[in-house]
Amino acid sequence: MDAKPGPLKKICIVGGGTAGWIAAALMAEHFKSRMAQIELVESDDIGTIGVGESTVPPFLQLLARLGVNEQEFVRETQASFKLGIQFRDWLKKGESYFHPFGAIGTPIEFGDFYQLWLKAAANGYPGPLMDFAPSAVMSREGRFTLPFKAPRTPVAGAIYALHVDAKRVAHFLRNFAEARGVTRTEGIVEHVKTRPDGFVESLTLKSGKTVEADFFIDCSGFRSLLIGKTLDVEFEDWSQWLLCDRAIAVQTENVGPPAPYTQALAQDFGWRWRIPLQHRTGNGYVFCSKYLSDDEATATLMSQVEGEPVVRPMPVPFRTGVRKQIWSKNVLSLGLASGFIEPLESTAIHLIYRGMDFFFRFMPETDCDPRLIAEYNRRMITDFEEIRDFVILHYCATQRDDTPFWRECRDMVVPESLQARIDLFRVNGTLKEGVDELFRSVSWHAVMEGMGVRPRTWHPLTDRIPFDAVPGELDQMAAVLRHAVAGLPTHQQFIDAHCSAPKVELAPLAV
Image (cartoon, rainbow, N blue to C red):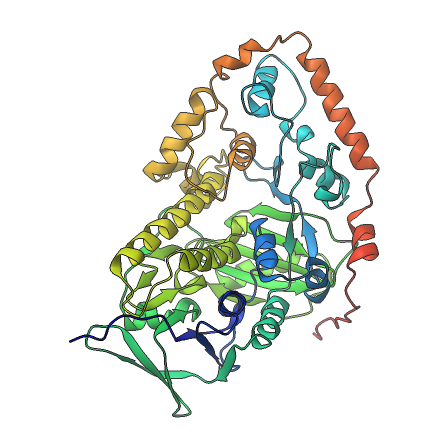
């Protein structure tokens, strides 16, 4: 007779890095070392990718949930602030648009400000949508303040995230977790033992040590040691929609003060990121290997970066898609082990946090009831698919035809779920609404407009608003926002005054 299910007494995390230490820190804080013993197994001999250095606003919820002082975290991780993403050359060469965090305009009588602007634009109003987004105007002017410190002002609707040093984040969270009772074991997993029912029973390390646990969290990166190699959970490949499969990453000295936004700069065969931190800038070229070699991508990247490199360019191969089961039996996968959507909208860390959030909601006993697992997987895969569709939108709506890469993006048949969103939006700006989605109306409005996807007309209820005075009122609204932003400190001034990190000397690479 099987043993009666009981509470999890021992949880083992396989792999460190950002994913492993986020999981460890959250469990340490939630369990307070009373509910379960937590052991993390990692090896200094196995490197982590460590280039996921841009976050989205829910990352700050993670810090709050841990009780971490945000100001201290910014200093310790050499972070800067992020108000959104600037996209250049995506729709056409020479054109750019901005994806802001936070509000656009103010709510109108029945709904979105976007509808009022849409009617005005259709009637010849020349002001761009981003003139009414506080995060976009602050980014354009290089200025920053904490929006919640400016209530009842035009900038209060802004929201921010962080640019962080990924390795410093892992180090910070490791210290946090170990101080709360998490045990770190140095070692490389050599063998995984399973029970007759397929559950993982124990790990054997190269040192000969055996690690047993009731539950395992696979944070082993693309190796997917437990969820993939041991449990053989199938991987659903999304490369037919997301063509890029490699990146070249390099860090450079800062040239000038850091901007309060990420840059995503389209290239001939992919795109280039620029993420400014306090002490350096992260750069990378995400590309499609069908059209470009590593050497060619590296040469292109190094010809465009600003500042002297402080590390050698590093190739990062990846595969876009998701495990068909992110949780199987007594193994939960997080980070790259669970799936990967290319870094265009900086969602990798969010999906780690989201994966742990749902784990706490569907916390199992030792039997890992399949009904909990099924609902967890449904919710998480829905999140992955929502983000996938949002990222594909940046590619499929392009009007570029100057390279075979962009022609393939333009001509692809997109997932039915994305096509349904686009078709609905084209009617009168109506958006399909999901449950607790990461990307809300502001994000879809910004990228749809930026990529040239505009509705045929506006929502009929917009006509309830007398229109004659609207253009003048929009001009005044934009002017008030500009004036408010002009009175803010620059991004660098804000960092210097509140959260400047100790100076780090970065020696340029010797030739």
